[in-house]
Image (cartoon, rainbow, N blue to C red; front, top):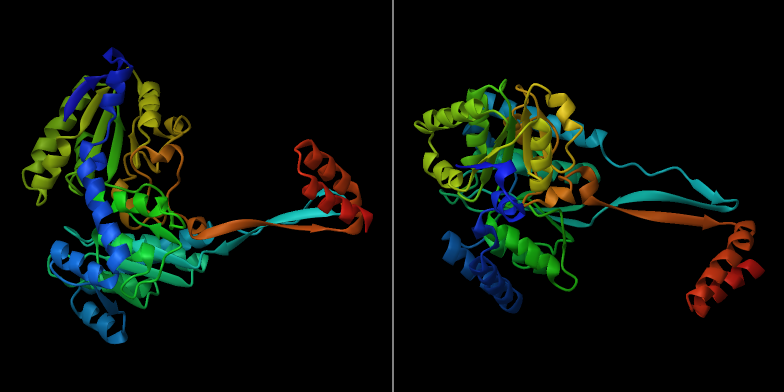
Length: 431
């Protein structure tokens, strides 16, 4: 991890300090995704099969979540494994049911003119669940359960085949807990293209959800840019974690948190921000110690090469750095952790204090762990029940209301040069 002193950097240096890994915006990634999209749009299912065989070694397939499949998956895990998964699913469902948007009451802005805001689920959601080097069945819960709570009628979950070519038993159990009737074993940019165009038996998604590697993130971006293309939950690419530490921070815990994100993906990025040089040294020493027996040490080391240590004057400046970076995950492990939250304006999820491990949020706390990356937290929120819904206004006007408000609207329309608009209002006023 490269160490930088924030106070000594000019504007260009600060931008460079907070830059994401170059691979995320690599032109080669964009070109490769474009080729896949163009081919699948032109040749449909045949192209999808070809790309799946080329990139994943097997054609796409649908795995039905039948009682037999669930029983087989259950036999392959321990009761404790299944109980932990159920606890996580229950907590995710409980949180999203409690935070589901509700229709507003009628609001009368002018006598006889009233409006309200109502929420409706989208028709078809495409759910991308990573499973290349690790089966992220937790992501399946974090997407499929909020979609179910929202009332989405079509939930199409796609996931790469993984090392064995078969969905992990916990993925099957997660799908069952989320109420899905099938999993589609197809990953990468080709899965996003299939959901975009409705290819290979997959529905055409109204909106795409889920994190992924640089290719998946680019595929979502290209899908949304197409005329009539699907909407996006947010930019959700390789994982990120920023840890704010001070002289009271437990270095063992801070190091473990940084490694927990570094082991995700070589493109993941971790950043340590602190006002204490000794604490920085302790944390870096701990990272080296913990790397020694980490099973995914090679991936973590590759990620750490893109990591940063940023020395700041105080925790207030640390908050400024965090807001400029807009991390997917922000862990505040300082003496004044609760107070520092008030200074944060851009983060996907904030974990406050020593005990609030980001890992708890990843798996079982309740809020979805599908969060904006690449600085998008400055404008986007993490997945919620509302992300699977749209809101529309409903307006009702009485005769008296039209007579009062019609002349106002007509005058404003004529000032904008829109006579047909004005006449439509005048007609109501005259009824």
